[in-house]
Image (cartoon, rainbow, N blue to C red; front, side, top):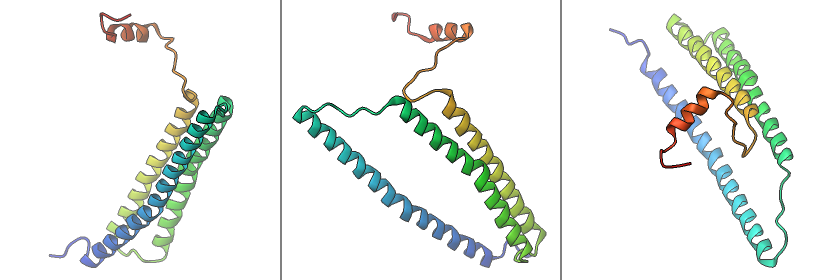
Length: 160
């Protein structure tokens, strides 16, 4: 009885997965270290300014909101547009290059690409819808009377 996936293919997939995971870790660790150092230096600078008596540098909230929306839109663009195009292109290339001879492999590749693309587009929609709903540090107001009744029901009885 032959197996559906030959052991050579599984070993190649394991090596590719290990390389990708190693590359992600190799990129992510220095970036996270840099972010931590930047935050520490910014904190030290603020504390030193407070010790000397200099006024704190406050960012303009509208500028921060605009930057937040700008970043959200670019993330959503690459999630919803860039990734699906790249995934379909890679799947089309590997299919047309003749590397996949079995129908099972072709189905696995294209079903995986379809699932990844659908997930990517859904995530992009969530990013866009979530970024425009409320600004940084603002709480949503409840305009629905049923929701406000639910909120008052969930509030502890001894509280305001």
